[in-house]
Length: 376
Image 1 (cartoon, rainbow, N blue to C red):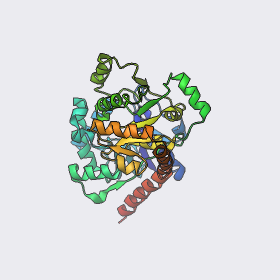
Image 2 (cartoon, one colour):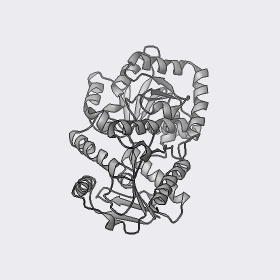
Image 3 (cartoon, rainbow, N blue to C red):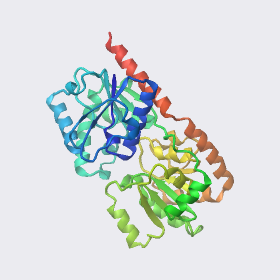
């Protein structure tokens, strides 16, 4: 039995939660009867409905106490094998690895933000992750990076043996597909969406570079005065200064947060937009790019970290630190219908190159290789 840690999905932790749930379901489909789940269970936790049929074990500790307990156990050389007596291999899908002595382990590393951008994390989280993540990577039997960009970061900053680090790409969930016109019309009314708007899909935090996006929007609005910016995603951390700026400059009618949007509405919200913009300074993978493209939306994105790897030739790129360049790319896409249509078609094709079925096959191959090597 292979055991997958789906704690991030239980606690609805944005992109990490999507990854854990989607991978676990794809693995279970690929190897029926061979996948079980593990998670910590705080008062706010709930296993996604699509995973409830799978066997599972849990510990009744909240997210923060459990993280501390795991790190202390690693330091103290205490093992938790008794929690998973029938497990042949354990896979942590977020940055938290159980200390197991008898069982081979795999950990997925999504990014190295705590190492590369310490200013974008709360202090306690920064200290914890910079202490824990290198340790977890050294202790794991194998490491999965969600992009080649992240793999190179791990090699450079954690000095791991490249041979133990594998790249397995994520994918957009199946419900991300072009929405029907009637559905788009419905969400326009439901969310009071403007006629023309840029859409940014992600958790709101400093790394997302939203201040520069607002600056670029102001430039584009000189030519297209009706254009607005819609932010779809929950508030993350260190966002107070951004919203204070919006209030101070009286931009509430130009920049509007929707908060978290339910999955059943999200493809239509994406379809209603004039253009998707992902200006992040750094992404370990950049899943929203694929989600936009799978819905038939054109994407303008920063040329940083993993974005070119994921967006391929379909996205239009800009330097995320150069506001005028960002504005020029946005303006060009909105005023050049031929390029817009070409990139829409390229985007649909690019999104089809990634699938959770493929991710499951590649992940299972890593599991099998680990177990085969342990037999000798």
